View 1 (tube, rainbow, N blue to C red):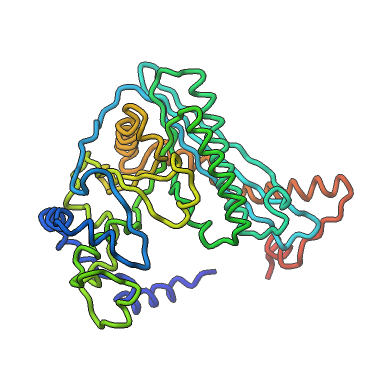
View 2 (cartoon, rainbow, N blue to C red):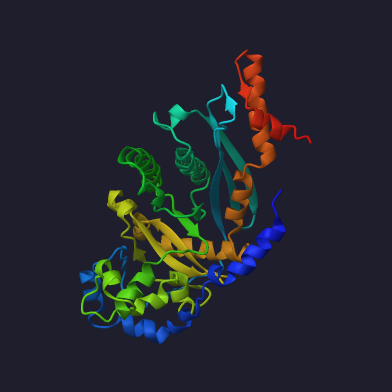
Length: 382
């Protein structure tokens, strides 16, 4: 059992190091932001900068902000989320894991309707890779979310092609976790992900991802370049040369801190384009674009494939649906919250899964052995 008194003492003693100060975000005023990004040499400095971080590009002007249509009378939104049960190393004779894609389909209009669903899938290691490891389960789950989302979207849009429709994902369309994977794993899963995203493109089904409390720093990196006192910025060689430098003051900030005085509720930023390394492997029409949106409770990041920019009113639809969903959900989209509830696998569900596996294994006269540790956890005694 967790020693809560010990935790309370540790937090109290480490509080000054745990809770870092963010007072510097007050210094990034609208006037400072406007002057910096409109400086005649700003774009040139961005172009010439050498850094250990990627620098985003943007559409039109960084100072552009746009009002969102905050009320939309009729639309349909689908949200899909996922979870998993990893293989249990304390059970011998069983080689599989469980994925679950949960979803919520909401229609708003004269006849509003809500549909909840769960799509579990039992998988074996060979379904993922010959060189199986537990962390690949998460990658397989992400593929299942995309697949279920597309199939459900295809069904919905075939049944009703007139009602404005958006498919929402939780998290990023930039598959960051693949950057650190071996090339063969990266290529295997990225090919799958991009194939599924391309199906949205082929059917012209609008999709986007919603990132709550984003930790991204694309705008912070631009501010670093803009506030650098050097003629040309070289962050790769800066740390060893200087004890202090201006951009240290904003190292703890995120893009939402930069925008908190610039974006009022119901407004979005201009469109930005990610230059993350993994994005180099995306085809041009699937490269992720994003904007920041103030939904009232927080500033969120909305990502979508580049092809969406060419679709009439699609950008307005995405921003309006995201804002309306966050408003209806008191700060977080209703559809995403309900999809998460459908996706989550509770401890009782996990116990049921392994109980069923053991039962089927014994019925079919397979040898299923539970470790003594596992048995002890199931039947604790003193």
